[in-house]
Length: 528
Image (cartoon, rainbow, N blue to C red; front, top):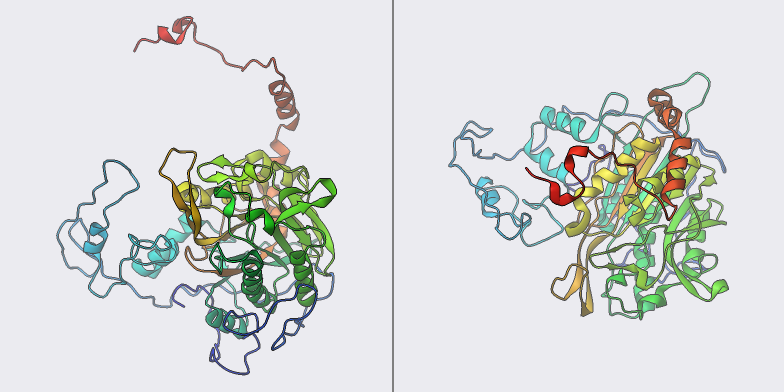
C-alpha cells in the first residue's frame, strides 16, 4: 500500500491459504459474530508472545531508526517562481480564492502544477483525499520532497522523540497481509525514552482503530451493528496478532453517527447496557483471546436509572472483566452536532483506569476542546488518554492535529486521537445550527488518527478516507522524564486557580479588569 509507513517486512502472498489472519471476520468470508459464543467458520487462535506474561506491564520490542537513505518517488513540479526541481521552467500559476468562501480554492492551479505522470487529482471530487489524491498530508510531502527535506519538514511539523522523528515499528508479516486482504490502512510507530538507572523501561503497545460504517444507515439496526462487529473484529484480531496491549475503538463504533438528525428512532435502538450488553460481551471475549485491554465507546442504555441514554466508553480488562466506564463530559451544540437531543453531560467525573499495562483515561470527542477536562485526567494520574471521536472536516480539521498534541504537552502524558472515516448519508434531510440548507449528511469524517507524546512529538496520521489500524509502542517512563525536565506540575499555581474558580462560579462575580481612565465611562467614548 502506497500509504503504509511500516518498516520493510517480508510479506506473504495475501491469498495464501496458510496465512493465519485471513479470518472468518473478513466481510468477504462467511460467518456470523456471536457475542457470547464462537465465530462460525475458520478459527483464530489466541496469541502466544515471548517476553509477555499475564499482568505484566512490560513489552519488549526491537527498536530501529527509519532509513532516510531509501530513495522515494518524487513528482516533478513546475514552480510559480519559474524553476522546478528538475531545472525546467514553467508558466506562472495563479491560485484564486472564491469571493464567498476562503475554503473554496481553485483546483485548476494544482492541476496545472502536476507533471503528466502525476496521480490524478481527486481533491475536488472526493472529500476523503487531498489535492492530488493523497490520503494524508505526510504522503503528499513525502512524494514531493527529497528525503532530507522531508525529514526536516517532519522534524518541524511533528517534533522530535529522543533526537529523531518518531520511529517506525516492525509488525509480523501476517498482520501486513491481513491489512492487504482486509483493505485497511496499517501504520506502526514507537516512542522512546531515556534509559534510567533506578526504573525499568515500561513499554505499552497501543492500538487505534478507525472505520467507516459498513451498511447504509437505513438498513436494519441489527444488521448494521453485526456488520460493524465483523469489520472491527477483523482489525482487533490484527492488533492482537501485532502484540497490542491496549486498544481503543472510535466513538459510538457500533452505529452510524445519527445524532445529527434529531430523530430518536432508530438511533436510540443502538443503545445497550455498558456492563453486560451484547457489544461488551463480544469485547470481553476478544480481550481474553488476545490478553488485551479494550476501550469500547458505545451508546449506553442505563436501565437502572430509568433507561437513560449516555455516550459512554466501556473499559474491559485484559482478563475479560468489565473494569468500568466513563461518560462523555462535554456535549456539543454546534453545527450538525445535535447530541443533547439524545444524551446529556456525563456524571462519572475524570476516572483513570489502572490496568496491567498502565494508567489510562478516556476523553470522549468534544471534551478535547476543554483544556481543564484534559488536565483533570492528568491530575488523576493518567499516563495515556484516548480521545475517541466523530468529527468532520468542514468543522474541525484544522484543530484536530493541534488539540491532542497540545494536551499531551501540557499534561505530560500520551494522547491517542481516533476519528471515524467516511460520509454517512441519512434518509431524511436535516438542518444545522448555522442556518444552512437542509442536507442528508454530516460531511466527511476525516479519520487521521494519531498518537502524540509528552515530549511534543507525534506520529504521522492514518488515512483520511480508509479504515485503519495504528500500532504504537509508548515508553511510559517518558511521562515522568518530561515532567522532571519542564516542571509544569511543580510550577503550577493550583491554589490560585482554585480560588479564582471559586470566585468565578459565584453569581456575584466581577471580572478582574483594570480600565484605563482615559477611555471614559462607556464604549461610546472610544475615539480613534
